[in-house]
Length: 452
Length: 138
Image (cartoon, rainbow over all chains, first blue to last red; front, side):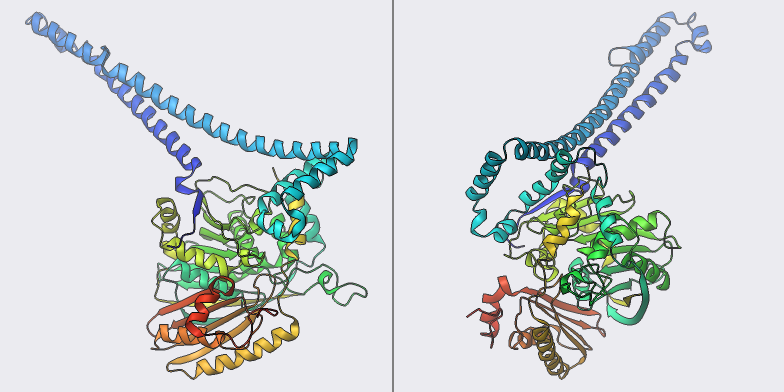
């Protein structure tokens, strides 16, 4: 284990999991309280049992002793009935407390959103009513933060400020364009931008190889990293032996940050023209939007071609754009898209903005995040505390945007460290993934995507 | 609450993550790595080598070497792969990924290195590079 620090958000040790445990414990106590109450009620019939009453004439003293003892055990201060009431009340209180805490948690999240929105509104108001003082105060704050010495370096070191600015911008827009209404959120905005790009899948070819199956999560992340060696390629690997085989899908990230315009358009720089790749910026927009795109379509088609049985566990692993695609594939499968049903067990993402993607409850998600990596922050969402979504956060500043986001330089060493960790929250998150790395041999299909 | 602007910021911020090498440099680096692959292919038990220079939006100046073998000495082959890349004239070079898979024994070994953070250790183990890892470095 290196000297890196890790923070674990959500998962089996998260707040939501604790509240779920509290609710479940409350429910159990309440239910047992009812059982005790029912037993007490049923036992009351012996107080008036006909045989017992008829024997009272023969032994009145014994009868009286028995009756008072039974009534005391049933209805006395420490009797069954009183305990039933106490247990039911305690269980109900625990459940109500869990619900109240969950509501408070959601309210606090909402308050953060409101604060950020208001911050944007106030800044807009300041720019309109007192532009010079507002600009001066902003410049002073930036100057005090050494922004002007090296702006790009400053942004690299303060991704939290970038996130805050991004989160406040809708408020600013609302001030200048009140009630604009659309696009109202990241998904709608991304959907508009995705429309500019070609989203069609042309061809999908594959080759089959025999490989060594991963024997650890680090091995699996290495396979994911190696998929990035070639453009527009991803891999499906069958590990384990039938009928207990497991399928791992390795989805690498963006290969080109390109523009939507046709290559060779006169007067346009190369950066604004279409790279012709599937793993491009247009797929990022479509992925964030949840819109149809060639990458998700190719993965669903490849899963059919690989013959993944409906009951075989499938693990989707993705870096950056690949993580978004992994989440979207899991979402598509849960909606019955893709022509077949699959059992998606796990989604593992490294440096991907996936907190805004709603995944079904039976899918466990592990997100690896570097606090200085700007990519996972750019959905504008805080790391969610969800019992089924564990986010493990590290803080490593390599000095470059690409380095802070790199599989080879950052996320693979991070997984090496995590596998050596004895932190119970980390161990729980990693133990859920043990099925994806049984070791031994494997069969792998590398798929190559092409535009139409 | 979901937000519009992040999507635009993604485009702007990430467009800074371009390749570190020019297309000519990338081509020359691939030729060097092809020779590294030939050199590694001659080692005992090695059945296949893929050496790739990757320099794109998601991978900055990375040399990736994947070796397949049967009954080979995994740590020794892995060490040879890293040594060969480190001793080559590939530049810029910011990351090295090397792996060896032995299909016969169903075992593998790998290493992921950042030149930015591991340069001192790499230099200690394999000596000075023949060229700077980044243009402009001494």
